Length: 369
Image 1 (cartoon, rainbow, N blue to C red):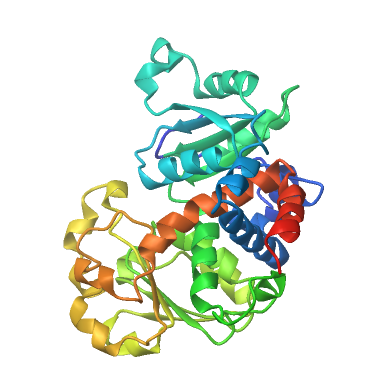
Image 2 (tube, rainbow, N blue to C red):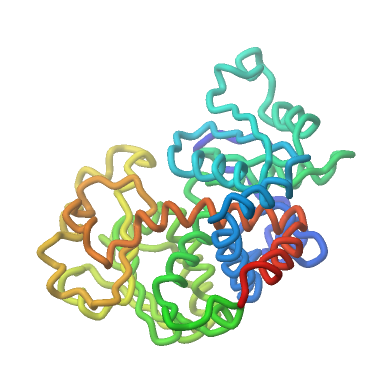
């Protein structure tokens, strides 16, 4: 069904289980649209795979091996919403696994200016390419495209690289990979058992800022709920509180959570802080202007109260909510978070195209002692 930015696409299957079934093949994600598609074993396996790709890609020989995996595949990056990190992260990921790619980043360069529908634009892409990676301002549009392509004679995977205010599943995967690496015992072996332990049990993770409209927060919360014993704290202005649908999901899974409007008072309790900027591009009538966002900023002066092992994350771009003087501290994980994105997205594409087994075999043959 066509939509405007104020009227999102209505998913074909309102029931989540049915929606996931339409997106998966052989009980694993084919289209990657929703964070709910990933259960704990799937997340653990992708984190393992990302680590393996990271290790293999560290040598010329290993990098050349990785580039043979998908050299026969082509990807279209359909990014009609502004993006720097996600776009470049996906192009780097394509290069790591040898996938050639093209991009459309402006409707004015496509036949949409002649009146072609977005659906027909995407249908055209599906005839040239083996994968569509898309970032779109409309909620539900990536899912709509996936369901539409399921009805085409030639079905190809769709990866959701950000869909309105709703979901950003690949960001959530790289975020949880970053937290995994931050919380894991550095003395533990790099082998697979590292990712079978629940490193989130007993950890308190604070989400700070615009939680109502931050799709990265929504998607990461879905994944963290796979890990019993994690505690979530939502620190935000009342007007920007996390949505009731997310709270219902958390409650059904028995995950402990609480609200706060005071970041400073509990800063020493947190094992991770996930900062977000004010999403004022989603304002309808300038409502963000009445919010004092300074109260939801992380300053350098707060560092004296940080836990030594604190992990600070931010999906970026940042404004004034994250003090640049924090960048040099060991707790600042947001630049590692950026780098982790290309490894996780490489792992995801490898999984979608079923070359993950070849990566695991290569890793165990050459990189374990």
